Structures are given as structure tokens and as C-alpha cells.
Image (cartoon, rainbow, N blue to C red; front, side, top):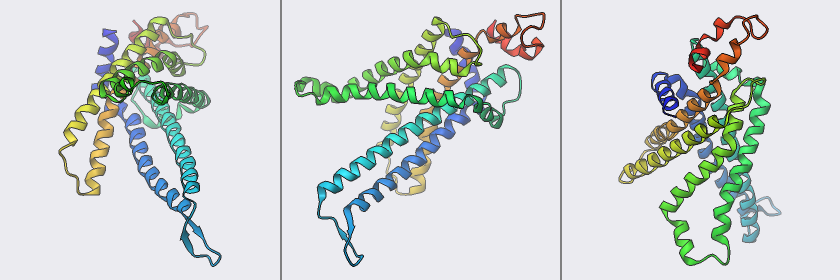
Length: 295
């Protein structure tokens, strides 16, 4: 664990290019969030107005219909946004892994080439995103169902709304997500014909995922405290702060992606060079960096 964290931190510190995929995904989601707010406003106006026989727009008289229609569309847009976010960060994970591999192999990191390298595994990445969404839906639905249960006590309702319980449940949920998804994530980052990841790799991946989640929650709390006394009067300043916050909040995610990439690489150098008679992948010198890492 210590060795993995040390190597991950060294790459995290020395190679800013590894921040690029996750940062771009975060900024795209930030822009999509702003667009979603405009879409919600448009949807409410659309359902709240109707056209008279003469073509004049008049307020709708059926407020229940307005609410039902708007809720369906807004929730649908929300689910679509969530799925796009998952897809973007899965793509960022794969691109980061390709960049890590090129650095370990002592090649120059190329973001465009790393992005092109994801294309052959695009279908697998999409399936992984769908699996992530399904598991996330279950994890999110559990506290919602418990809070809405008619027999739930008032004491439980108070605990459910507390910040401590929220953070505790977030860490438990992150651990469950990681335990179920880390093996698939590492396998996605490995060559298609490689062997499955070990149980030790799964445990390390889960520990790193929970640790980075704790750091992310701490950053969120500290940034929220720091922003509380600020008075923002300009839209451009609001956007600048939002972008800075996005980069800050995504820093633990970048570290996690690097660690998962290194876990996926472990053992590949030895496997790639084990056949000295040329029965496997030919010149072992091209895997010098992978072999050095695996040792």
C-alpha cells in the first residue's frame, strides 16, 4: 500500500499532464450544469404557458399538469446528466491510464494519442459506465427509501439529516462502490488478453478509493468554509471560482486514477517479456519501463 501511494504521489506531483483528462471532464460537467439550469428554466416556462386560439401565449390554468410535466422532464435531464458525467470520468480514467503507461514505458505523454487509444475499448467503457450507474442508483436509493419509510423514527430522521452521518454514509457507499467496481475498472485498463487482477490489487484499489474519498470530503468542507464569507458580485468571478473548485475537488480523483492505472500495470512487464524465444510479444526492450515498475 505504501509503495503504491508513494509511486502514485510521485507521478501526481511530477507530471501535470495527468491532471488534464480529469480536469477537462470536470470543467465540461461544470458547463453542463450551467446549461442544465437554463434548460430547467426553459422547461418550466414551456409547461407554464399555453397558446390560445389566436396564437397568444397565456399562463396555463392546470398547475398540476405543469408540475407533473416539468418534473418528468427535469428528472430525465438529471439522469442524463449523471450518465454523461459517469461516461466522461470513465473516459478520463482510461485516458489517464494510457498516459501513465506511456510515462512508465519512458515515452513522451501525448494526450491525443492517449485519447485515441481508448477507442478500441469504447464498448467496454460504455458497459462499465452503465454498471456504475446501476450500482450508484442502488446506493443512492437506500437512504432515500429509509428516510421516506413511514415507520422511520424521528431520531433516525435527525441522524439522517446530520453532516456526520452524511459523511459516514458517503465513505461506506464509496467503499461498496469501489469493492464492486475496482476489479472491472482495473480490467478495463489492462490489455484485453491479460489475466484478471489479484485479490490484493482489489483490496489496494478499494483502500485508495476510500482514502481519496475522505480527502475529497475534507476538501469540500474546507472550501465551503472558506467560501462562506465571500460576496461574489460578478459572473466572471463566480465562473473562475467554480473552475478553481473543480480542479481542487478533482485532485483526489486524479490521484485515484493514477493509482488504478499503476495497479493495472503491475505484472504486465513480466508477462510481456516472459517468453525469451519470441513466442509472445517480441522485443522485450520495448517493455523496459513496465518490467522495471513490476519489479
